[in-house]
Image (cartoon, rainbow, N blue to C red):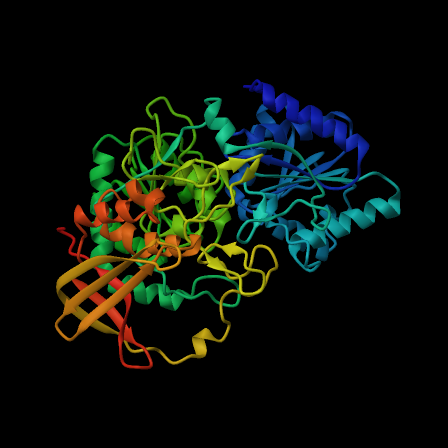
Length: 567
């Protein structure tokens, strides 16, 4: 059955047709999950087939290849598939849907696919193209067919589609020095939600602590080290069980189903142990294609409530009834993170919102990114956390107390105010606290030799009593907050200034946020002595333990404060 295009899809196709006639450089369609990329793609390729030309559509994922080909056929096209994973090597149709690996191999072996005069190459999930290396599969394919078109004298175009138009930590794939020179349109997640084409996401709050992956390092390829992940998970086996039991209570409370993104294959099994028998399935890269299809079909029909995966199910999966996304793995890839969240944003009659449960700290890891899904997640939800929101000094936008950079927009650009930051030593630009390079001058912010330094000994001290008092800064008349923690070994002191913007942010992040009830009420009054006296008078939460190291003079320096969970 032929699907009718939405108005914005018609507009996208019109712009594409116009620009393809006017320019030869690669074009990008920035279209979020749920925008109907496969339908846009199908209608574009139909134009080529009806004109009597040939086209190639490349996709990394075999399931997505099959889905795109099926959509194309339903729209009236006649598709061929060139993908070893699907057991097909058809190069005879006008429009071919293939995997870059199979096509690149066909070119290398000088098979029939290598000689086809493709007028258009479409790349779905185009952020996978790495233009800096001509030896990659995508670039070998582009260069081969580009040279062939030039030699034989026919025109040749490239169009990419993606909902995540960046590589790494938010580096755009569009620009004069990038492979894609022009973005034809931007169908954003936030716009689709506003128009009713996607389900609004909401980050859920639970009573179970997340797994601390903060000390897991990345390797030379930018991936988290597998051995260190396994070590963290081995120490948190009980916590994984608690998280899964919490997830079960959420699903049984009226939710339809959950994607569970685990850290390793062993972790997938660990997650499954605490889920109801017969209601879960594990999908990995080794799961056979037909078995995977059956599992996804059972999930779509409601027979499977929990889909556990590692390294897959981020794309090419359409299970609109699922309404919970559960992260128990850290991901260094913003692309994977937003794609995973996007799995639960599709519309379904029985869901009104999508719940994102992040037990791996990914939101904080990727918080300083201009991505609509991330910014939606960072924004305070209506009617929730009313006492835990802070206004931005610059744009007055309300932010969650955990936000490090304001989510507001000023003149179509992300607000530049930071609540927590580290300053670049070269140009003094504020940067997110986990940034490795300055966003302004690209100076290195993390000492590359830090891992070579000796491990500093730490001490855990039990706190029996705490005292807090205020002094006045002699020059600025702003408050100085003093803390004394009486422990089983010695008195430990802290002192916070509020005479500069940076000092106030440090004070708020390290003291107010964790030790003051309704902390956000005091954010705008940190430099006011009367306001700070009122704050201390209403009570300060005392830590039960301090984790410290010692300075060169043998005095304790606080690294971390531990609070009783019952407080």
